[in-house]
Length: 176
Image (cartoon, rainbow, N blue to C red; front, side, top):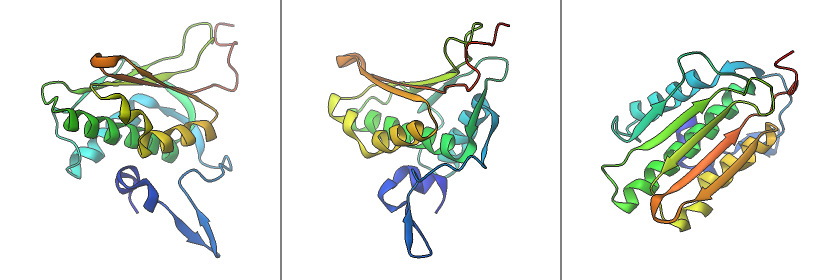
């Protein structure tokens, strides 16, 4: 199943391997963890959703820094997180009828002192009941398997902000 299908239909993301069911949030063995540019992953996730017709070009606005934002993550899992979050955000915006407001995906580098790792944020118009969606639940589980943090903040009528922070193994030593 493709990563887009996994994001849009998280309950169908099961693969059978020797009689065992593995879900998208199965154990992370560390073999696919590498330093990747979160900005490039964000562009790729949006391109996948646009190519498959899940997202229109005007529905997602990327806010990326000029320089790469590297994080030590699993490419597959971080891309799944972005796909889940983007698909849910666009769905929430469509259900609200907010066609003029795009989903904003912003990627931020870690701070100079290493107090926090690289983050990305999604901001979108939504009702509070969308905070319990399957995509948000799956994304939270995926982020936690990667050792990151996941927060959702409801701004009432202004919308929702989802923040994913990637923890770095050598945090606190970036300025030395």
